[in-house]
Length: 115
Length: 114
Figure (cartoon, each protein chain N blue to C red):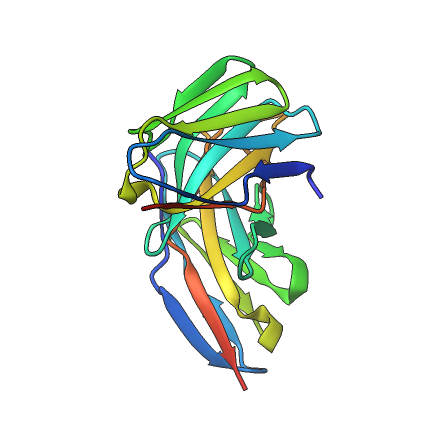
């Protein structure tokens, strides 16, 4: 158990509303990631963080923003949800100490439906 | 840039038969390669990883993978599958020049039948 908790686990929201997903870790790791999983696309990186207040974009960042004010929490916000953002969202952490050779540990996912 | 191609979206196989799930990668620098498994309604779990050294890597649940640099491949194999291996499998790459970002393939759904 890598100590990752995602909340909520399921959410249904209406088009145009803001939505925030939370990822909480208990192990004090620098690197945290948000991915979305869609059929036929696998997992695609939305944003990631390499420390408090340090974030960067992934390959599908349009329409999303993130914040990391504490080491343990990484928030993903959909400013104005659209139906194309219906997906399963996964948070991940990496215990990177010497470089990009360590695996990622994933949360259980958040299933978001935008109607 | 780094990318991963999983050539098969679905692989049906009978129980106790061998299976190979294919993965090809693209990276301009040395790479680190991973295979993950996802059971229904769960997150991803690491099966195995290649960092350096021996090209044959053994993982959990009897899976193994072989790194082939000349063919830029990292195929996953199991000599005899079980019903419980039914899941989706993802190959991932982190190139040395790709920051600390994992890039995933589109996944292969393995369905084991009796």
